[in-house]
Image (cartoon, rainbow, N blue to C red; front, side, top):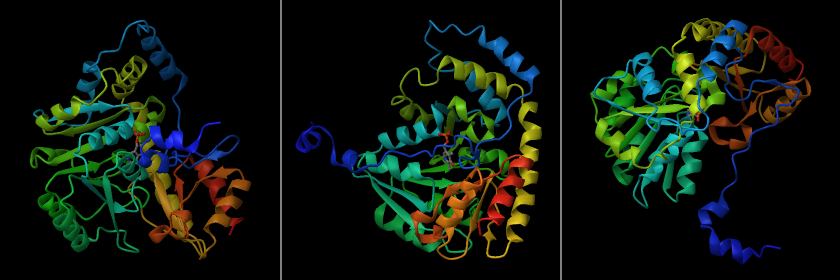
Length: 359
Ligand SMILES: *Cc1c(COP(=O)(O)O)cnc(C)c1O
């Protein structure tokens, strides 16, 4: 038996107080819970990809700078030439790296509800995480409140997801600009859903030295590879690069992502389909009595059930074979809310059928 005081002696209280990030078991269920692209590749593309895998020397360490992949990421993302780029094992790793760089007792600010890893990692590192609630209904930034918290607490880092997860909206541009100008530290614009949105801050990184734009290939359709990247002032990227473990992007990820990003036609039609399905699903959800669905610039839709029904509806939908995400237990603005990832046309039809029979 491990004595409790043993744990308390060897681990920081912040670690003991955490809960591990839980991922629901999706076996035998239609998986619409994790913002994955539902489409895999045609056989001919898989064959071409497997041919490139032949050249991977698994006995060797990967290129620590992932130079070939970085070059493709630069060109496919229109990254300003003078900006720095850092690659991470998913953007989750970059979030961890950013926060590891901050001084002790730093304040980290993000609107809430937002992406859960911002708070999870900040708390694990014993940083002071401050969440400012979004405005009800519109899920817009509460600009006066954000500016007040910035003035009072001088956050070292501010996260703004654009579009936001789990609400799906793009925050107002003037509000973001005011926050960037008031921020005493770094502002991270998290563009995890860039493939599904029509607006981006990538070109803005050259205008503001404190703005960094973070993206990932996960939602595009390569969640299994674990690859994210962050773009910003070369001097900031250099500092962050000191904390990066040397071989964080493995050789299979480097080669596979390089292959995929040099074959952009793989994703073009998939993204179009997902965006088309998004409008159809939004309309179908809002046509259901008792359901309010919110417009989304991402590959998911947040919707509200009748009061205190969300968990029951979620469980019923699961009984019908479809896994979505229950956000009701988060409380606050997410009370009565569920989130569904846009799937294939057939999956979305099954989800709607399940929902109708679950209300
Ligand atoms: C999914 C998501 C991420 C994490 O992406 P990975 O690259 O898969 O780690 C980051 N930010 C937001 C807002 C997300 O929704």
